[in-house]
Structures are given as C-alpha cells and as structure tokens.
Length: 367
Ligand SMILES: Cc1cc2nc3c(=O)[nH]c(=O)nc-3n(C[C@H](O)[C@H](O)[C@H](O)COP(=O)(O)OP(=O)(O)OC[C@H]3O[C@@H](n4cnc5c(N)ncnc54)[C@H](O)[C@@H]3O)c2cc1C
Image 1 (tube, helix red, strand yellow):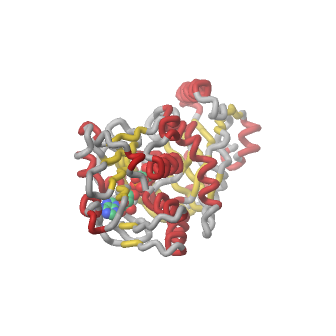
Image 2: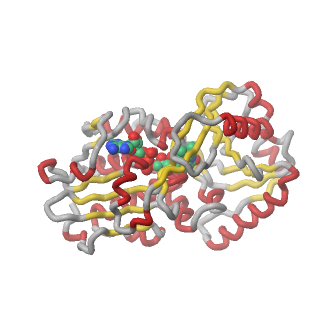
Image 3: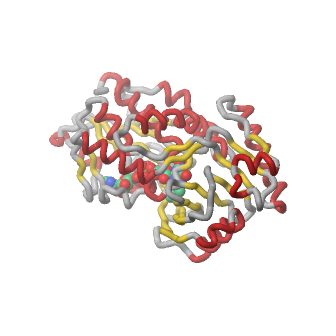
C-alpha cells in the first residue's frame, strides 16, 4: 500500500520520501507472500459488502495503474474457477446460492455461471478429467505481486524518490516540524500495531492473521486462471502465475506466529492440490512461506487521520487483511482525495471508514 501510494503521489508532483524497515525486495511484507488474487465475488462469501464494492472499483483501476508503469506486470482478468469433489456438492450448492444472493444485492457483480462437464472442458481442459462440473466467476482477476513490487520500485527510482531501505520509521518522530513533511502516511501493516492502540476507538486494535502459502513450479499442470477448491476442511486456492509457477494457499490461523510452515499445513495444501490435478505430483517446491495479514478487529480496512498543531498531519492506512491487492486501488483513490480535498466522497460511496482523531476541518490544511 505504501509503495503504491508513494508512486501515485510522486507522479502527481508531490515531494515524497519512503522509509522501509526491510530491503527493497519487500521481503518483510505480506504483499510479497500473497497470492494477489482479485476476486470480489469469490470473497463475497466471507466478507462484507463494502469490501466487495472496493474490490469491484479496484479491478479496472489496476489495469490503468499497471498500464502507467514502465516495467510490465502480469495482470489477468479471465475469471475464477470454483471446483468441488462429488461428496462436497451440497457445500458447493450453498456457496453458489450465497454468491447469487450477493449479486442480487450488488448489480456490479457478474453472476456466477454453472459449468457442466463440456463447458468446464472448454474453459479449463486441465481439470476436465477429474471434475464434471464447476462454477465460473467472470471478470475476476489476479496479478503478479512480486513483479508489481519490482515495477513500483523501478518507478520510484525513475522519479528519483529518496527511498530509505532497512530503516525502521517512527511516524510520530517523522511528524516533527524540523523534518519538513506536511503529511506522514503510515502504511506499516502489522508494524503499526502499537500506533493503532492510540487510535480513538481502542477496540480497533491491529492483529496479525497467519497465512501459509507454497510456490510450485509445475510445468505438467496447465491451469489458466485462479482456481478454488470447496472443501469442508481444506478450502484451498491455486493461482497460476507466468512460467508454470503456481501459488497455493492459504491457511488462515488466528496467530502472529511468523515461524516457518507447519507440516500439517504443508500436507493439507499439497494433498488438496493433488486431488485437483495429478500433474502436481511432479511439481517442484520453490518456496514455503508464512506471513501475517494486518487485520483490524472488525476485519475491515480503515484510514485514520490525526491532526495536531505544529506537526505534520498523520494518515494511517491499515486493516487490509486478506484483501490488500483486491482493494488497494480503491483505498489509494480515497487516500488521494483526502490528501487533496480533506475528505473523500469515493470512501463514502464505497463504505470505507475514514476516521478523524480530531474534529478539525482538514480542507483548511490539505496540501
Ligand atoms: C498468505 C497470504 C495470502 C494473501 N493473498 C491475498 C490475495 O490473494 N489477494 C489479496 O488481495 N490479498 C492477499 N493477501 C493480503 C495482502 O497481502 C495484504 O492485505 C497486504 O499486503 C497488506 O498491505 P500493507 O501494505 O498494509 O502491509 P504489508 O504488505 O505487510 O507491507 C507493510 C510494509 O511496512 C514495512 N514496515 C513495517 N514496520 C515498519 C517500520 N517501522 N518502518 C518502516 N517500514 C515498516 C514492512 O516491512 C512492509 O514492507 C494475502 C496475505 C497473505 C499473508
């Protein structure tokens, strides 16, 4: 989120400096580990309507944002495929009717399409041997998160934005007038945990939700689009990136434990994908990774603003949880509006919470 915002602000002519605790590769970010699926309808089964609206807003914006970058980024919008084994048909039926109800509530969502054996074989021949039906969610997408981080870095370099790598930042210190900033924008993900304890509504405490993913090289598997398996115990997704790389995930565990992947999680993820495509048997494991999703108590994202006299204004953006890629262009647009106008009608329309620590009218101090 921070890198995206830094690029957008620099492009608009702002003088920007970026501070990052880790190295330029983003190794400590959730963003580097994510599968980067952009799936508002699939996610509508487990998230709130406002997050779904942010996801719908963000899909076309990703296309624009990526088109403006000097370095190409893999971006795909060929839909999501949902599969299930015969014994899980009743779960799949419930899932499909849930999505259909969500489409009735939000007309911007394209309805899911039921696939029989023949139509499944047409769109995803690689799984047609094992599955005779599926559900297709048109319009959904994905991108390559590591290519995006790299392309944003190139952009920062081209615009000569000073980037302070391996430098842990304290936003409260950066706000001191002698640093010369008008705004300090805190996008530290889980690194902002202490700061969120100071936000007016203390119940908003930030927590991490552990997620484990496996990266595979699987040239024998030919999946064309992100595929999710409905399963009572191991609901998994498989996101095919370029060059036969597949990102398989993800566990979701209420813990901030960043230790390596457990044997249990590895076995669950790997055995589940093998039931989707036998070609995974000969895949090579490139990486098993763990990161925590930065999550606020209500599992919703938020922008919080604090204005104190004689200090830089502070904007905190956090709680992107499991949807950081799906919704960050929407959050970017809202943040840019707040920075230039003092408020955001886009945030109001999308239902993104923008909270103010004081009642100060920010339109008088926007810069
Ligand atoms: C396993 C997994 C799978 C996921 N899959 C998806 C998906 O398919 N689709 C999707 O939309 N989202 C997905 N996500 C969620 C997404 O990755 C996050 O929502 C998103 O990365 C959050 O962005 P952020 O910028 O707030 O935090 P981060 O990406 O964590 O970035 C925070 C940055 O702040 C830096 N930092 C921390 N402390 C400091 C400090 N004191 N000073 C300077 N820098 C600091 C960190 O080093 C890091 O680089 C997934 C996440 C995980 C873990």
